[in-house]
Image 1 (cartoon, one colour):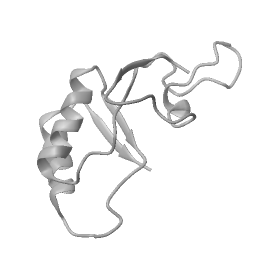
Image 2 (cartoon, helix red, strand yellow):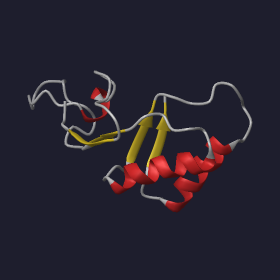
Image 3 (tube, one colour):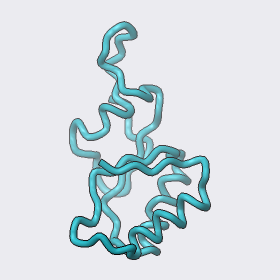
Length: 102
């Protein structure tokens, strides 16, 4: 796996980013992620407020991230809430970034 370029608290859990930036170092094997030369930044799940979401993605953006993959969300509601507003605001202001959720 690629080295972590930036982390807010601790290293990411093993295997979480392998599909995106994994690299076993063998050019002909299928053990490389889609963006195997990418740099990985990692941070904890932010509070689901508009301000916290924007701050979290802005920090990752400032550390060089442009593709954001997330394995979290707000399963407790389908309302257009602060999480949604924050993601929309960040995406609108950063058209060169792509935010994805699994």
